[in-house]
Image (tube, rainbow, N blue to C red):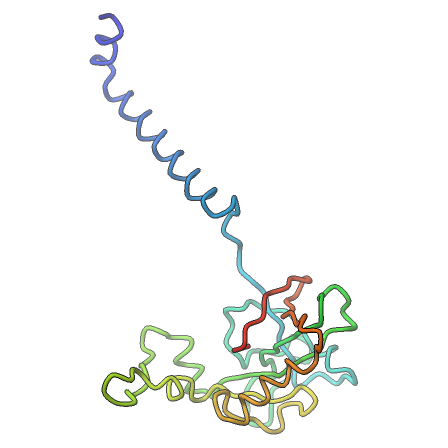
Length: 200
C-alpha cells in the first residue's frame, strides 16, 4: 500500500517519466527501423564551371549542395556567361565500377534551367503540373520539364537541348555505353556512389 500511496502523491512526476520513456522508445524505433542510420545531412553534387580555363573537363568540376538549381556562380572562374547567366551548371558524373579513382571519372552531360524553369524549381509550391494529355492519361510530364536543358562538357554548353527531347534522351542514355560490364555508378563529391537507374 505504501508504493500505491507514493504513486498517488507523485502522479505528476510519474506521468513525466512515462512520457519521456515513450519518447525515447519512439526515437529508438524510428532510428533502428531504418537500419540504424541517422538521417544524413545535406548532400553534395558535382557542378561544372563553364568559365573555367582548363584542358581537362574534369578540372572544371566543383562541389555544391544538391539543392542548388543551375546555373549558379562558377566556383572556379566566378565568371558570367555572355547572356549574363552564371557559369556553374550541373554535372552528371559517372565511373565504371568505383568512383575512388578520380582519373576514371567521366562527365555524361551537363545541365541547367532556363530562367523561367529555374524560378519554378526554386519556388515549387507555385510550379504548375503540365497540361493533361487527355482523359485518363494524367499530366504531361514533358511539359512539366520544359526549360531543363542538357549539353556535353566537351561542348562547354555551346549547344543546349531540352532534357526530355529525343536528342536529350539519347545524350543521357549514351552513358550506358561507357561501361560494357554494366558496372556504371554515379559519382558524388567525396567519393560517394549512387546506384544508377535508367532515367539518369
